[in-house]
Length: 457
Image 1 (cartoon, rainbow, N blue to C red):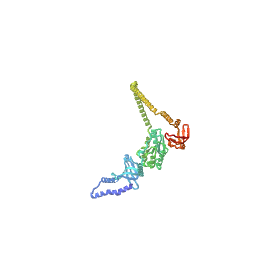
Image 2: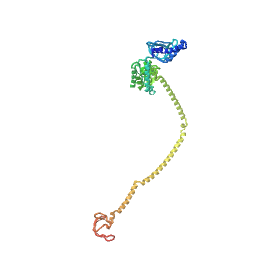
Image 3: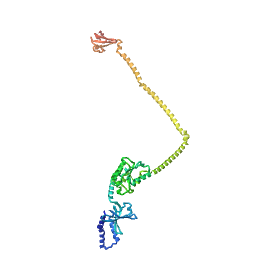
Image 4: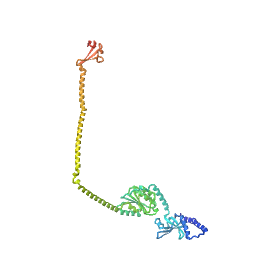
């Protein structure tokens, strides 16, 4: 709502609403108001209706009181309204100056001593800041849903970085403050500055490219990205999506340090660590060398003390052991074990001899069994059997029988052995086999049993 709108709205509508009941009351009740009672009723209706407003206009007649309160007039082309900015709110918001185009957020109040209304300001921003805040809010919601701010993806900072990268303006106080703090805390640091514009057109592109370059060439172990304080417009390069994307995809841990402690940017939420100021970022990125040396000295003393205490305790233990009965008279402790060993050795020898004797007996039995089934024994028996068979074969050999005066008779044509007279007929030719030859004969006479049989040869 601009000043002229508020003025017309108040003059035309609300004054009628305020005045009409009193006109009616005056006619019906004939009550006469005091100035204070009328002012109070107007104040009550006015402030109850305009509990929170936003008014845009130009600052003029600005006065700062020693109490910290600020008073000025907010005007446009045709109207004006008084504004009071009390010290409690003045410490938390933008302080205007004459000629600024601003937006005042607050409530309407009626100042009774003068019978005039005014705005009690709670927050002041420059014209256009509202759009920036809306843009910032929408981007913050979007990136939060995408997980850009998730604690799970925050990378730990290296404890002892060898190379520190800084993305900031080369001419501002930020780089000087960082170098000053690092020089004080850890003089042996190595810093690489990637200079960028930190506000103005295309600043966000330079910042994002600097972050990507550090990652592309793996130049540093950790980065500080930031700038000094300023207005929302001044800091807005660090609220752009391109910078948030570069921080999100960075493999190198990033410390964000934008503005003062009360300033927050999208870069702060995306970074692995947020520092309230650039100097604080330098405090975070490296340990204090003197403090570290002091800590190491304490650890060294503690370790040395522990080692000496352990050595002393070990010496006492060794001394106690050396003076013990075990060292002064070892056999008194070992005798029982020595005797046990001897007895066990004797038992083992005896048992072993018994086992050996049993094995020998078993071997002899096995040898007897093997002798029974020995191939040579079998061969000897087979030879005897063969000799017996040979004698038998010799005795039944026809040739040997023939030598005793016997002969074999075969049919001449068929070589059939003649064993019975019934196989012969008269005039059959037969072959007679003798011990030393053969002869042919012809059958002339056949005689069975004891009758005479003649053969013509």
